[in-house]
Image 1 (tube, one colour):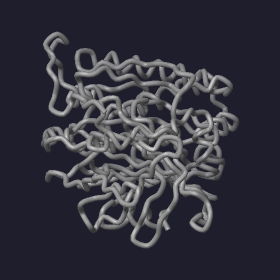
Image 2 (tube, one colour):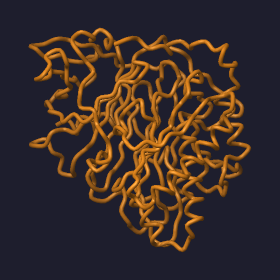
Image 3 (cartoon, helix red, strand yellow):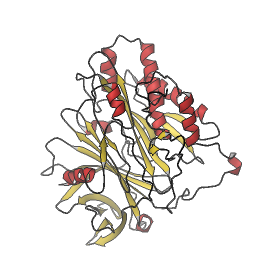
Image 4 (spheres, helix red, strand yellow):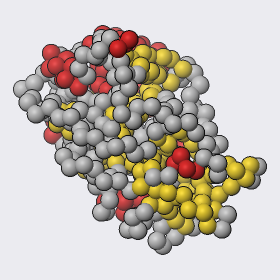
Length: 432
């Protein structure tokens, strides 16, 4: 069944993963806390993969959102999606209990940095092939095990909907939740559940996002060799947001939750902190939104407070405070999208069992948000204990240190004045 296929992909020839908690902020606490171990992504030649274990139904991750179940793919625009690459798969898998980190330093040591290969990446390129009133989106590489099956919508025969995924052994029908096409028409995302029935996994549902992106002319990733700063996608690998664009980071408001004000304030302060450090390097702005799509939307780079996401109280010496997913486009060395998850249940439990003051918790939330937005911008974890950094688990830094400033300035060098900017290769979108 499909879930087995994706699990094969997670450990097989095409997609490799590494254990650890990359792209998250782990905190120590007293007394008992909770912790979920996520399988972090390791960037290889073709596909980025991450699996997160969710305690409770992954459907709860969608409750505050407004999904778009209407496909943007039509028989008249199929040519625009020919030759795109299967770029990433994210799974949010339901599990009765989630593994725990042993302690804070161990979490730091186990934080496995994704490695960006020096060789040019190879990609599985997909094309639409019409077969018996269906359109199969499949790779030219016959060894790739999946075919994505699109069928005409019942109310519009020209609109094509993703309805099933075929493996070598089975066909899984899908419940499509959200379609997303990036504003620059360079990436597309599909968010779905496998429909229930004989294919239901005994451990529960899996919410899956798959991402394709358009291919540009291959471009080498710029590297910094000395010092080799620990960027998100590997030491020295400069994969970043396009500096020609203004990046809007959003906080997805949950006005009825008791912790909403604390996180909203932390978000505003964190955006201001990084914006001040990125003057003439990258323009970012923060925005509070009440209506928002699911996390898979490629045009909303959002901080998502999630009521029941991932954790419940269990004895442990550490807990994951926030989690970030950042997706690169490997063909032009830019970031496509990034989102932050806040497990509100974890914070609620920690605060209820803590002697810290509200001001101390506000400071903790702000420090954590600064750390996570650094992941959004392309910075990775610092594991060198001789370096003071907001990106270290065991650091006492409450704001970006000199090392952090040097690292972000290396990733985003000073830019030409706006009236002298020119576009970068592959930065302009095609009409669809």
